[in-house]
Length: 375
Image (cartoon, rainbow, N blue to C red):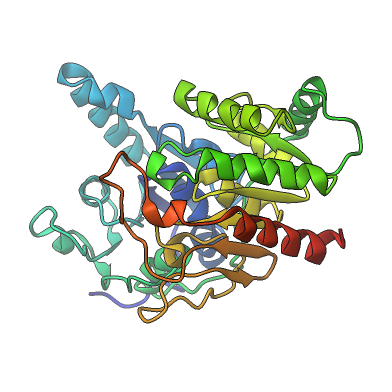
């Protein structure tokens, strides 16, 4: 391994975060650390399609290169053409430093083929491409299981001597997107000036979801607190249908905008909300990024990696890997034992998630509202 890159005159950097929407947003403190360390460098981010909105408008990033997985998954010439087109874009950036924030084989291979003199990555904790660790000039050891994902990304940079900077998440939206969100809220029946909560009961991974009855109960609880619930979801028809069932089960005590916001508009809507309530999902991370307090319901995934991020240690350890906790303005509601993967195979539901009670969720909502608004 080589010495620290800090202090070198680096003119161009390419960084790979080929993961899901929330993962990409959680990488923004690492991109900020790169910008702080190399203020004059041109920084390109390589991400999967449908995740680029997490980085667009970010002043720490000069260029976003998108891997179109849809074309890749089509196979044949489309797959080869997409892989080749992406590689050409990467090489056109003429990077001197390539950073792969994940353990993935694709990012490692593209780092090697990028032409960068210095290549920074992380040792894989699972079976992967043999000899891949030799692709890197600077290698981060395998991460601690109970370390938050934000710190895992920053640890990769630390392997090259690059220190963390401001730990905040960064998510931007335009005035036009803010106005678009407010028009949709008004058009759905939201009175002007009313305190509201954004509630997202859905996830593309169904085993992350709480019960529809429980979420409907939260809508009723918010309405009784005179906080208007606004229900959102991803654009997939199954998610929209799930969200609409929750609204119906609440007796119509909520405004439904399920599937109708873009990611940027969703961020704008959440930014003006009193609280966000939802499961482990990208909107939960967006809420933390725009400074809205979060009540996050966790079951099959580790809050130690994915809890709402405010730059504060959640205190999860191997001895205490789960449980309901409050850090800063955010609360994670989870059973005291580690429920990871428990019950996932049975109908894509999680027993630990379903054991969360309405009383526990309502108490968390009350705690956040009292802390933030005095309500």
